[in-house]
Length: 296
Picture 1: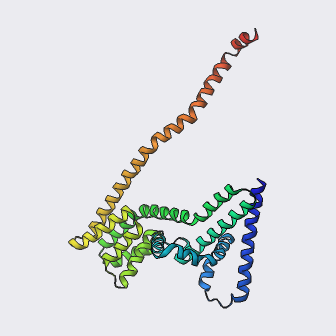
Picture 2 (picture 1 turned 120 degrees about the vertical axis):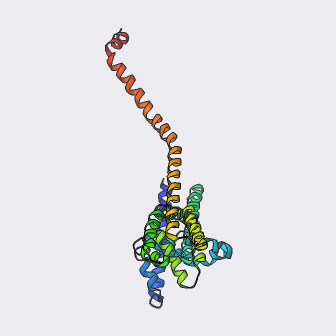
Picture 3 (picture 1 turned 120 degrees about the horizontal axis):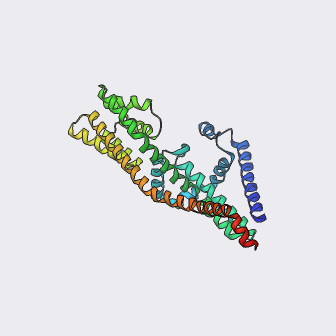
């Protein structure tokens, strides 16, 4: 326990030293840096995150070389698929990951000196893989939000299209009144179409970024409607019905899987209590009989 406390204090000391180095560097060259926008975006972040970013300044180039161009492109696609959470682009993600890796190495050496190598290895594994765990959770949260919000978004879009507006104008109008990942992806597709990208390519990119079955259903039906010349409003209504039907089936499947677990937990928790109450009641009701038996 004492070693753990000393190791934690040592880690805080390392972070404080890194912060001091950052302050010294800022006093000498901070007025020359013109990255005011990025500084304002980080003002609301905690001190720990800022210190991690400071630690990662030196190691980000090495980490980039270790990744290689192919893995960097794959990581960039994952970040875009997660919607660049907290404004993290590829460079900042690499910098922050390098900071966590450096922190894990420092903690590992500290715990080795304290003769606690196993504890150091555990901390090193956790901190070195922390950013990827965080990104995986961000991806899951974004997909849940996409699947939850898409039917309502398409419902409003179908009504707007049926009112007589062209599809692109209707999509812009609906995006103005919606927030969340669905609106963000649609705005990205609209921006690409303004730059000259075809509707097919723009929404195909949306499908690749989202990696959601519901989004895939929407994009497929939309492109088929464009090819066959069917009314988009009718196609959107059909998509919404299909998505909600699949969602209801998924909920029923999850409920069916959860029912045995709930029954098992209820049995495990309720059975001992029920037995205790029954035995206790029986003993209390026959306390005179037991008193005569054991008293004699």
